[in-house]
Image (cartoon, rainbow, N blue to C red; front, side):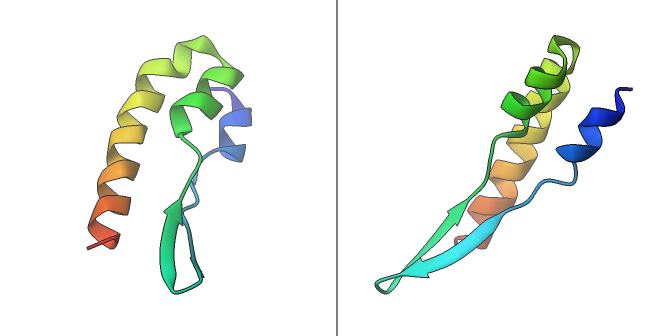
Length: 60
């Protein structure tokens, strides 16, 4: 494992409000992890799906 992945994991989800609307945002782990090493693309994609599910559940 490349120790640079520690800069990406744990992932951060940002929640903010603007003019009465609430927004949820995050950087896709797959993009960040693949930038470290192409070997992490599959793992990053799985992480994307999990993070998306968390954000979708929080938006309910």
